[in-house]
Image: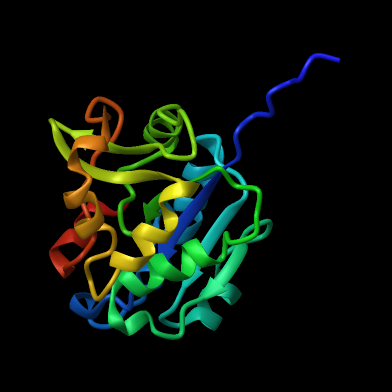
Length: 201
């Protein structure tokens, strides 16, 4: 019998724990965009971009987010240390994949509604092996989403402290990152301040 190679499992990891400190404490997951909470748009971008399963890391107002947003079919993890910054949420998201059959994690941030399924699919298709490392680029500048092959998770988690997220790891492994230009299909802006809310529809 010919050995059929299984299709790689690329899990989506959505970091949606932020408390929106500069937005007057409004949890980013619940900011409204086109009539629905931001977290739903991001989950759809991951799903439509070919990622599955989708793991969502909540933090600020986690119970309200669960009550108001449709996260059916997602694996939801609540990060009790979300106030420490993105690093702890990234660790929580990666540890939620431990023991799964995922070959890679594609990490997306909830506050980047300009990134949709097309950019996700592009970065996803950069997967080559469990050692893969790829990121979306906007006019040559590295941004999100970022793809981490499973062999890299421990190293990424070890460096994910404070608000760093994977920044330190990506800096150290700069030469290994496959940059995937996405500026023709996505915009990498963040919703961080009250002024940025004008970018939501």
